Image 1 (cartoon, rainbow, N blue to C red):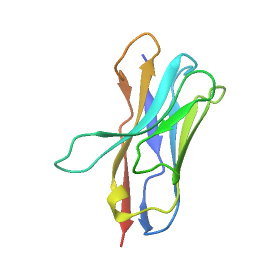
Image 2 (cartoon, one colour):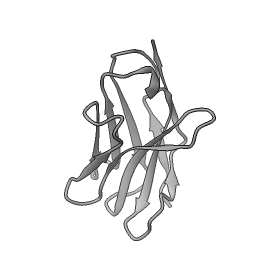
Image 3 (cartoon, rainbow, N blue to C red):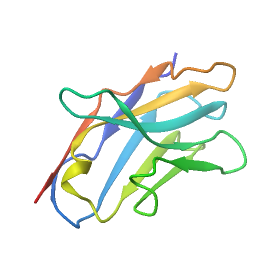
Length: 118
């Protein structure tokens, strides 16, 4: 079982940048690693994913061109670089891991709060 620890969330002004980090307790090589976010009263929504092979990534339309996800398998970390932040980016951000053999994200971080002030 993979234990994920999210960090890096804080208060930031509109237009600012922030980097979130996720550290895993064991190898993430055979996992697709993603970030999700959630605001009160809303469903948790997909933000970005770094696939386990080929360096492939994908993003939600709302963050494409502003956010960049990266992974370092040797360090067991996943990073989300967020630029040009907007108030609608406010939420709790969660790191998630999906084994390549299953279709659901099975492991989640505890979440880190990002607040973008207008």
